[in-house]
Length: 358
Image (cartoon, rainbow, N blue to C red):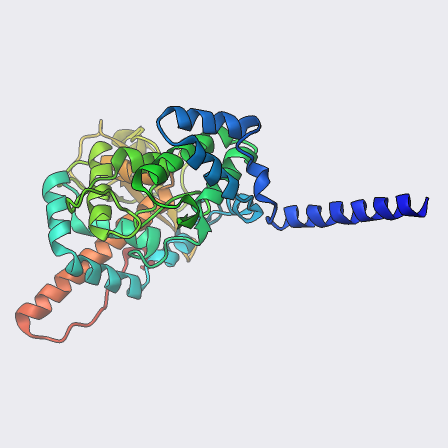
């Protein structure tokens, strides 16, 4: 009887330890057993596309659950910050200077990307600056773990992430890289531009003609791929991203502001609510109405145009699109100041002022 009680006590102890491990995100790799349930279904589907079944079994056998990833999905800055707080994350002087230096280091690739895709260097650089600080911060999570966790444990978006996991496995197989050695964001975004796997498959380009689409370590491929992404989403070369506007102290009712979708409110409709722009633009033109909260509590109005909407296709957040836009403006202004310094011989001082601070 004592032996039975001892075995029961051990079983309870082991069960408690496993529960603690699960809570800390350190469960066994068998959580993603490729021979069972939904994991097997996914492996079967990817195998049918030409990926080795043995390789897939081995890959999923290395996947580990991460509670940290699930927690991070509910605390993204895009969902929890207002404009002035979000903006301050990305519009520092150091990041602007790094953007200028990054463009200078890869000038040929940026200029060629603009010629091919119509996207200015400062906009491509701003994406890289916001996403990974120009390749310095590419993420700390194993992509295999992030996508496996989200694919089979996310309460609402499992189907989406199963598609991303399948695409990731195909990429790793075709690129001949070890799937458990690649790191990225908690949501499975990868490399310099933080493409999710399906975007990698659809929009990544071999911009340096070395026979590989390498977004993990090749900045030239990343520059071309961002340009291609924007072009495929109908970026309009030479067109502005937004218009400055003026309006009442409090955003008026009846207008849905800050929506990351195709321009949906006409300029004339906004004018009826007291929101106007000094730009020469038809009243029939549809825009994305933006009401940005500043640090002093006031509201800054802008009208997002088609190119603003295109930026939101990269990340479906008006905060993200506006941060990219202002960082691009700051980088362009710093480049111009540097060119002026070179022409006049005066010492270059970084002194970029951002309109949102005024």
